[in-house]
Amino acid sequence: MKKRLSNSKIHKKIISPHASLLLGSGGFKGHNDYLRKQINAFLRSNVKKVAMIFYALDPADRLSAYSWFENNDIFSGRKLESIHESRNQQEVLKTAEVIYVNGGNTFKLLHQLYKNNLIKIIQERVAAGIPYIGISAGSNIAAPTIRTTNDWPIVTPKKLDALSLLPFQINPHYFGGRTYRRLGKRLIEHLGETREQRIKEYHQETDNNLDVIGIPEGSVLIIKKNHISYESPLNEPAVIFRKGQKREEVTPNKNITHKLL
Image (tube, rainbow, N blue to C red; front, side, top):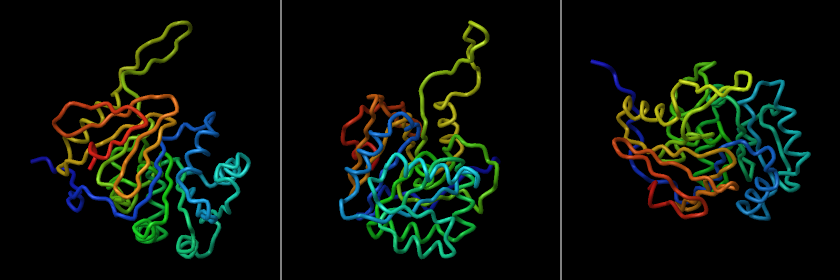
């Protein structure tokens, strides 16, 4: 008999009543003003110190990522501190007023969080009400597992269980339909799996019945006190996949709490 994937610890549809999360799909280049606006609306004005986690990136790319946030003033003058540069990463997280987790490779990110013993402290800080902002891979790890990432497993984390800040899965960079490649002047259909097919495979191979929401590039989920809203600058719908049911599109700028909790 084939062994089914399981994450039996996660079944209750509940978020910590104090949790405050802004989860982006990625693809914000060209939408700097939109991302800055979302972050400013999300954070209180008296929040000043941001712990930045760039473990999803290659070490050579971390400085340029940090500089992008500084040069574009994405956090509007707040103090930014990259935890990988600190000798005491847990202390940086304990004193931070915001936790930001950048995109990149989700497997590499989760591997480093386990390696540096950061999982528990991030969970505790978010449960206590410290805002969490994740982009792409940073959104993936907010879910119970990273099994719905688009990334290659270039490293092997201790396990695939993630932060479990949410009772559902996320698929960032989601797009519906098929893809095409250009050959000269022709467009030829790529016959690989679609995102929808991959998510259906996830549901077929798991026994946890977790919903999956696919969010397109540039869009965000905002979770505050068990209230969930979905927003997109391009007015693209997100898609919710439930095991054994038809997919459901959700339009932007609406309360979607009842659809996921």
